[in-house]
Figure 1 (cartoon, rainbow, N blue to C red):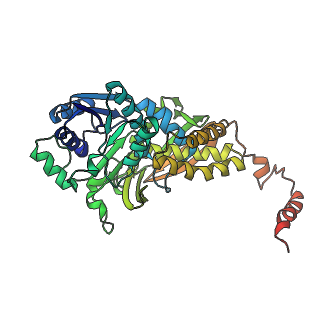
Figure 2 (tube, rainbow, N blue to C red):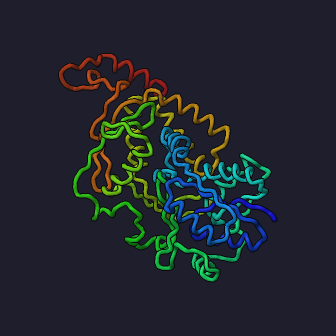
Length: 389
């Protein structure tokens, strides 16, 4: 019997994929990556067994996800179209990597996924697989079957007594990991109405957010967060704490008309409190510690890096080259940033670093000013020479 390894989330799409692949004559092995997802390993095992899976791999990849995927993107300040911190996009190359590894282990010739035929994730996973092992054959059921909507998938699952999570009443497609949550579909596709309250996953709406400022201090070493409120904690713990704190303050929800890889625009809702807090603090510290040319270079590269990650080009030489350049820039990014969270806003309160390039004696307009104002006239004349006719 032909063997296929399916990237399995336990959601509606991949639950239907298992049945569809079995009906095509495949022995279905499933792989689930725990990146901080909405389903527990026990839930996944129960669903997989009921769906008829022959074997299920569940791997806790949160540490690898943070160390090898989240940290590089944080150092790069990569945010797609100014609103998306790449939470879902970051998980796909990691899933592809382990999908390939398990296919080798199982001696399977095929891998499969439950990504929609007009979405980004099919691109990200398939490019990852193709880059790591071009010999593997890829099956994408959602591009082949005659189920044309989530409603039809729900009907299919009910017909075959498959375990369900989605319902017609709450029909959002949700993808969750420790770096953020994406919510799409259902009433969110109507751009003329306010999102329903049940579309909020865990960030509180502003009217329900904590009505008092919350203060934080985050310390970085070489661009990596190492301490929260004066206490050194593992980054996974910090992210979990910041997600809860930020969500309580209404921080981290974005509503984006997004340009997908394949060219269409879609509405995406993202909730990522910890990611936004850490990106904000990291950028503030870079402004304090990086020289102007390095800082401007990073601004230019951030959008390029985000677009590269968004498209799924993680395992490429270009990405490796950018990582080397960005890593070199993070040496001076040491110090602490104090923040205030209030009603969806993040405000900087304090900055400190032994590598600070800010010099009060040069910047002040008060007593102690050491700036030589007589140099300004010559500087301005030299600066303007190319533009004087």
